[in-house]
Amino acid sequence: MIFDTHCHLNHEDLYPEIDRIIADAEKARVKKFLVVGYDKKTSLLAVKIAQKYDNCYAAIGFHPTEIFDLSEDDYDEVMSHLKDPKVVAIGEIGLDYHWIKDPIQREIQKEYFIRQIELANHVGLPISIHNRDSIEDCLEILKQYPPKFGGIMHCYSGSVESMWEFIKLGLTISLGGPVTFTNAKTPKQVAYDVPLDKLVVETDSPYLTPHPFRGNRNEPKNISYVVQEIARIKELSPKHIEDVTYQNALKLLHIDE
Ligand code: NI
Image (cartoon, rainbow, N blue to C red; front, side):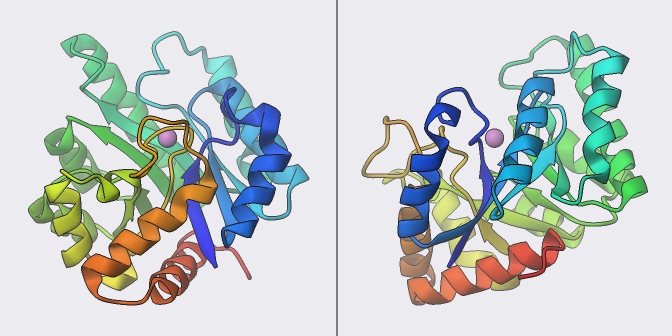
């Protein structure tokens, strides 16, 4: 059984078909889903989905490109749901220097990243981390403000060397569609080197569709391609990768089977 630790069933491209998408994923052995918010609307919807579907859990928070017009009222309204038992993480949070080039805006990203890490530490939850073209600052912040309850490097795309730095900080590495891409040398090397007890899997659907469906809209049912590729690289059975990553996710997110 598989735990998709990062999917956006709350995204407008997927939500209208959520019943069919969950049913198809279950047929593909996906047993649990972490539905991850990135702004007010999607965080509140993640909570609603988690309340309605037994096998869905919510992460709530503000993505680094979604903080610039954020009011304190909206921040507080979203975070008031942290006491909901189906909210199991804060995320996705982090830094995104791919889309944001302005140094002042990058400083605001850092402030919100730190603020949400400290909140997670305060309420006792792990975090889901988005990092794009910002790995040095991301590592620096995590060293200064270590997430006490762990977290997931969502769709990890950095080097093997940086992977060890994140693992040293107690973080778990999540691999998704890019590990299947035929030209993805670094993610495949990460898949080879990452210790099994530090690995989880995800789709980031509707994004990052695995090979051979790259370019189409992604759904959690496609996670088996990610599992199969990691299994091939590690020379283990897909079943073994499924079981280990499933148990890792339950433990990290404090979910009882
Ligand atoms: Ni995402």
